[in-house]
Length: 275
Ligand SMILES: [Zn+2]
Ligand SMILES: [Zn+2]
Image (cartoon, rainbow, N blue to C red; front, side, top):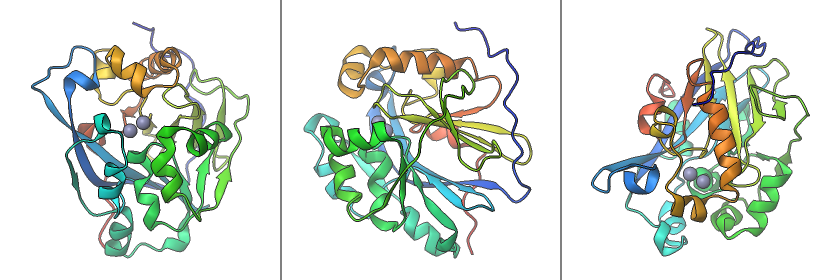
Protein backbone atom coordinates (compact mmCIF):
# COMPACT_ATOMS: atom_id res chain seq x y z
CA UNK A 1 0.00 0.00 0.00
CA UNK A 2 1.63 3.26 -1.08
CA UNK A 3 1.27 6.05 1.46
CA UNK A 4 -1.29 8.69 0.49
CA UNK A 5 -0.02 11.78 -1.30
CA UNK A 6 1.14 14.05 1.51
CA UNK A 7 2.38 16.98 -0.55
CA UNK A 8 0.31 20.05 -1.35
CA UNK A 9 -2.22 19.83 -4.17
CA UNK A 10 -0.93 21.78 -7.18
CA UNK A 11 -2.36 25.23 -7.63
CA UNK A 12 -5.27 25.52 -10.03
CA UNK A 13 -7.34 28.59 -10.92
CA UNK A 14 -10.06 27.31 -13.27
CA UNK A 15 -12.14 30.12 -14.79
CA UNK A 16 -15.74 30.31 -13.58
CA UNK A 17 -17.18 29.18 -16.91
CA UNK A 18 -15.08 26.04 -17.18
CA UNK A 19 -17.02 22.76 -17.06
CA UNK A 20 -16.72 19.08 -17.89
CA UNK A 21 -19.19 16.67 -19.47
CA UNK A 22 -19.18 12.97 -20.25
CA UNK A 23 -20.17 11.67 -23.67
CA UNK A 24 -20.70 7.90 -23.42
CA UNK A 25 -20.52 6.29 -26.86
CA UNK A 26 -20.98 2.61 -26.05
CA UNK A 27 -19.58 -0.37 -24.21
CA UNK A 28 -17.86 -3.67 -24.91
CA UNK A 29 -17.92 -6.79 -22.84
CA UNK A 30 -14.96 -8.22 -20.97
CA UNK A 31 -14.85 -10.78 -18.20
CA UNK A 32 -13.48 -9.52 -14.89
CA UNK A 33 -11.04 -12.45 -14.90
CA UNK A 34 -9.30 -10.79 -17.85
CA UNK A 35 -9.54 -7.27 -16.45
CA UNK A 36 -8.07 -7.40 -12.94
CA UNK A 37 -6.19 -9.92 -10.82
CA UNK A 38 -8.67 -11.90 -8.73
CA UNK A 39 -11.61 -11.10 -11.06
CA UNK A 40 -14.16 -13.85 -11.68
CA UNK A 41 -14.68 -15.48 -15.07
CA UNK A 42 -18.49 -15.35 -14.54
CA UNK A 43 -18.37 -11.61 -13.76
CA UNK A 44 -19.04 -9.87 -17.08
CA UNK A 45 -18.06 -6.24 -17.19
CA UNK A 46 -19.30 -3.64 -19.62
CA UNK A 47 -16.25 -1.59 -20.52
CA UNK A 48 -17.12 2.06 -21.08
CA UNK A 49 -15.97 3.90 -24.17
CA UNK A 50 -16.62 7.46 -23.07
CA UNK A 51 -15.22 10.81 -24.13
CA UNK A 52 -14.86 13.74 -21.75
CA UNK A 53 -15.43 17.29 -22.94
CA UNK A 54 -13.45 19.90 -21.02
CA UNK A 55 -14.97 23.31 -21.74
CA UNK A 56 -12.69 26.26 -21.17
CA UNK A 57 -12.86 29.90 -22.34
CA UNK A 58 -9.51 29.44 -24.13
CA UNK A 59 -10.99 26.55 -26.12
CA UNK A 60 -12.53 23.16 -25.47
CA UNK A 61 -10.78 19.81 -25.62
CA UNK A 62 -12.04 16.29 -25.69
CA UNK A 63 -10.21 13.63 -23.73
CA UNK A 64 -10.46 10.62 -26.06
CA UNK A 65 -13.07 10.19 -28.78
CA UNK A 66 -15.10 7.08 -27.91
CA UNK A 67 -16.65 4.86 -30.59
CA UNK A 68 -17.16 6.36 -34.04
CA UNK A 69 -19.65 5.53 -36.76
CA UNK A 70 -17.26 2.91 -38.17
CA UNK A 71 -16.86 1.03 -34.89
CA UNK A 72 -17.92 -2.27 -36.50
CA UNK A 73 -15.03 -2.04 -38.96
CA UNK A 74 -12.66 -1.00 -36.17
CA UNK A 75 -13.59 -4.05 -34.06
CA UNK A 76 -13.26 -6.29 -37.13
CA UNK A 77 -9.73 -4.96 -37.67
CA UNK A 78 -8.60 -6.17 -34.23
CA UNK A 79 -6.74 -9.41 -33.61
CA UNK A 80 -9.22 -12.18 -32.78
CA UNK A 81 -8.40 -12.30 -29.06
CA UNK A 82 -9.26 -8.61 -28.70
CA UNK A 83 -12.64 -8.70 -30.41
CA UNK A 84 -15.55 -8.48 -28.00
CA UNK A 85 -19.32 -8.06 -28.20
CA UNK A 86 -20.05 -4.35 -28.13
CA UNK A 87 -22.98 -1.97 -28.00
CA UNK A 88 -22.69 1.34 -29.79
CA UNK A 89 -24.61 4.39 -28.60
CA UNK A 90 -24.55 7.86 -30.17
CA UNK A 91 -21.10 8.96 -31.28
CA UNK A 92 -19.54 12.15 -29.94
CA UNK A 93 -20.28 13.77 -33.28
CA UNK A 94 -23.97 12.83 -33.05
CA UNK A 95 -24.15 14.04 -29.44
CA UNK A 96 -22.60 17.35 -30.49
CA UNK A 97 -25.29 17.77 -33.14
CA UNK A 98 -28.09 16.75 -30.75
CA UNK A 99 -26.84 19.22 -28.16
CA UNK A 100 -26.35 22.07 -30.63
CA UNK A 101 -22.70 22.20 -29.62
CA UNK A 102 -20.67 24.90 -31.39
CA UNK A 103 -17.80 22.94 -32.91
CA UNK A 104 -15.82 26.15 -33.46
CA UNK A 105 -15.06 25.98 -29.73
CA UNK A 106 -13.28 22.64 -30.06
CA UNK A 107 -9.46 22.88 -30.18
CA UNK A 108 -8.97 19.16 -30.64
CA UNK A 109 -8.99 15.69 -29.16
CA UNK A 110 -6.31 14.99 -26.58
CA UNK A 111 -5.90 11.21 -26.59
CA UNK A 112 -4.88 9.32 -23.44
CA UNK A 113 -3.31 6.88 -25.91
CA UNK A 114 -3.89 5.65 -29.44
CA UNK A 115 -5.70 2.32 -28.91
CA UNK A 116 -8.84 1.75 -30.99
CA UNK A 117 -11.35 2.13 -28.16
CA UNK A 118 -10.06 5.64 -27.41
CA UNK A 119 -9.73 6.94 -30.97
CA UNK A 120 -12.47 5.26 -33.05
CA UNK A 121 -14.62 8.42 -32.90
CA UNK A 122 -11.93 10.59 -34.49
CA UNK A 123 -13.53 9.57 -37.79
CA UNK A 124 -16.38 12.04 -37.18
CA UNK A 125 -14.35 14.91 -35.74
CA UNK A 126 -12.41 17.15 -38.09
CA UNK A 127 -10.14 18.65 -35.45
CA UNK A 128 -6.45 18.33 -34.55
CA UNK A 129 -5.30 15.35 -32.49
CA UNK A 130 -3.26 16.40 -29.48
CA UNK A 131 -0.55 13.90 -28.63
CA UNK A 132 3.05 13.67 -27.41
CA UNK A 133 5.94 12.38 -29.50
CA UNK A 134 6.14 8.98 -27.76
CA UNK A 135 2.52 8.23 -28.52
CA UNK A 136 2.80 9.64 -32.01
CA UNK A 137 5.52 7.12 -32.81
CA UNK A 138 3.60 4.27 -31.21
CA UNK A 139 0.43 5.16 -33.13
CA UNK A 140 2.36 5.39 -36.38
CA UNK A 141 4.28 2.14 -36.05
CA UNK A 142 2.87 -0.36 -33.55
CA UNK A 143 0.25 -2.99 -34.43
CA UNK A 144 -1.80 -1.47 -31.57
CA UNK A 145 -2.06 1.70 -33.70
CA UNK A 146 -3.79 0.05 -36.65
CA UNK A 147 -7.19 1.68 -36.11
CA UNK A 148 -5.50 4.95 -35.14
CA UNK A 149 -3.74 5.06 -38.51
CA UNK A 150 -7.09 4.72 -40.28
CA UNK A 151 -9.05 7.29 -38.28
CA UNK A 152 -6.23 9.84 -37.99
CA UNK A 153 -5.73 10.08 -41.76
CA UNK A 154 -6.20 13.70 -42.80
CA UNK A 155 -6.08 15.01 -39.23
CA UNK A 156 -3.56 17.58 -38.13
CA UNK A 157 -1.41 16.27 -35.26
CA UNK A 158 -0.75 18.89 -32.63
CA UNK A 159 2.31 17.59 -30.81
CA UNK A 160 2.66 18.93 -27.27
CA UNK A 161 5.77 18.70 -25.10
CA UNK A 162 6.14 17.84 -21.45
CA UNK A 163 8.08 20.09 -19.09
CA UNK A 164 10.27 18.61 -16.39
CA UNK A 165 7.75 19.87 -13.87
CA UNK A 166 6.64 17.05 -11.56
CA UNK A 167 2.91 16.80 -10.98
CA UNK A 168 1.40 14.75 -8.15
CA UNK A 169 4.23 12.24 -8.25
CA UNK A 170 4.51 12.06 -12.04
CA UNK A 171 7.87 13.37 -13.24
CA UNK A 172 6.75 15.47 -16.21
CA UNK A 173 3.65 17.41 -17.13
CA UNK A 174 2.02 19.80 -19.56
CA UNK A 175 -0.31 22.54 -18.29
CA UNK A 176 -2.72 22.95 -21.22
CA UNK A 177 -4.23 26.36 -20.45
CA UNK A 178 -1.52 27.68 -18.12
CA UNK A 179 -3.95 27.96 -15.17
CA UNK A 180 -3.58 24.45 -13.73
CA UNK A 181 -7.17 23.54 -14.65
CA UNK A 182 -6.12 20.82 -17.10
CA UNK A 183 -2.72 19.20 -16.69
CA UNK A 184 -1.43 16.24 -18.68
CA UNK A 185 1.11 13.95 -16.99
CA UNK A 186 3.18 11.35 -18.79
CA UNK A 187 2.09 7.99 -17.39
CA UNK A 188 3.63 5.64 -19.93
CA UNK A 189 3.86 1.88 -19.88
CA UNK A 190 0.48 0.79 -21.26
CA UNK A 191 1.77 2.49 -24.40
CA UNK A 192 4.96 4.59 -24.40
CA UNK A 193 3.10 7.91 -24.50
CA UNK A 194 0.05 7.08 -22.39
CA UNK A 195 -1.04 9.98 -20.22
CA UNK A 196 -3.18 10.80 -17.23
CA UNK A 197 -5.18 14.02 -17.46
CA UNK A 198 -5.84 15.96 -14.26
CA UNK A 199 -8.77 18.37 -14.36
CA UNK A 200 -9.80 20.83 -11.66
CA UNK A 201 -13.23 22.49 -12.02
CA UNK A 202 -14.37 25.82 -10.50
CA UNK A 203 -15.95 24.11 -7.45
CA UNK A 204 -12.44 22.90 -6.58
CA UNK A 205 -13.29 19.28 -7.35
CA UNK A 206 -10.41 17.39 -8.96
CA UNK A 207 -10.53 14.55 -11.46
CA UNK A 208 -7.85 12.17 -12.69
CA UNK A 209 -8.62 10.62 -16.08
CA UNK A 210 -6.06 7.85 -16.07
CA UNK A 211 -6.73 6.14 -19.40
CA UNK A 212 -5.83 2.43 -19.22
CA UNK A 213 -3.39 2.51 -16.27
CA UNK A 214 -6.05 0.16 -14.90
CA UNK A 215 -9.28 -0.71 -16.69
CA UNK A 216 -11.55 -0.88 -13.67
CA UNK A 217 -11.95 0.82 -10.29
CA UNK A 218 -11.07 -2.53 -8.67
CA UNK A 219 -7.51 -1.80 -9.74
CA UNK A 220 -7.52 1.27 -7.49
CA UNK A 221 -9.70 0.00 -4.64
CA UNK A 222 -8.13 -3.45 -4.37
CA UNK A 223 -4.72 -2.25 -5.61
CA UNK A 224 -4.41 -4.92 -8.26
CA UNK A 225 -2.82 -4.97 -11.67
CA UNK A 226 -4.13 -6.60 -14.81
CA UNK A 227 -3.68 -10.40 -14.79
CA UNK A 228 -0.16 -11.30 -15.90
CA UNK A 229 -1.02 -12.64 -19.40
CA UNK A 230 -2.96 -9.44 -20.12
CA UNK A 231 -0.11 -7.30 -18.88
CA UNK A 232 2.16 -9.12 -21.31
CA UNK A 233 -0.35 -8.67 -24.15
CA UNK A 234 -1.70 -5.21 -23.44
CA UNK A 235 1.19 -3.24 -21.93
CA UNK A 236 4.40 -2.03 -23.58
CA UNK A 237 6.14 -1.89 -20.19
CA UNK A 238 4.20 -3.53 -17.32
CA UNK A 239 6.67 -2.35 -14.65
CA UNK A 240 6.10 1.26 -15.68
CA UNK A 241 2.34 0.71 -15.53
CA UNK A 242 2.74 -0.55 -11.96
CA UNK A 243 4.61 2.65 -11.00
CA UNK A 244 1.87 4.79 -12.53
CA UNK A 245 -0.86 2.79 -10.84
CA UNK A 246 0.84 3.17 -7.45
CA UNK A 247 1.04 6.93 -7.99
CA UNK A 248 -2.67 7.11 -8.75
CA UNK A 249 -3.60 4.88 -5.79
CA UNK A 250 -1.77 7.39 -3.55
CA UNK A 251 -4.08 10.12 -4.93
CA UNK A 252 -7.36 8.21 -4.76
CA UNK A 253 -8.53 9.79 -1.48
CA UNK A 254 -7.93 13.29 -2.80
CA UNK A 255 -9.71 13.26 -6.13
CA UNK A 256 -12.21 11.48 -8.36
CA UNK A 257 -10.20 8.85 -10.27
CA UNK A 258 -11.62 7.66 -13.59
CA UNK A 259 -10.15 4.54 -15.21
CA UNK A 260 -11.26 4.93 -18.83
CA UNK A 261 -13.31 1.72 -19.03
CA UNK A 262 -15.09 1.66 -15.65
CA UNK A 263 -18.73 2.67 -16.24
CA UNK A 264 -19.36 3.51 -12.57
CA UNK A 265 -16.33 5.78 -12.44
CA UNK A 266 -18.22 8.32 -14.58
CA UNK A 267 -21.07 8.64 -12.06
CA UNK A 268 -21.56 12.26 -11.09
CA UNK A 269 -20.07 13.73 -14.27
CA UNK A 270 -22.92 15.47 -16.15
CA UNK A 271 -23.97 14.58 -19.69
CA UNK A 272 -23.74 17.19 -22.43
CA UNK A 273 -27.00 19.18 -22.20
CA UNK A 274 -29.42 18.91 -25.12
CA UNK A 275 -29.56 22.16 -27.07
ZN1 LIG B 1 -5.37 0.80 -24.20
ZN1 LIG C 1 -8.69 1.11 -23.63
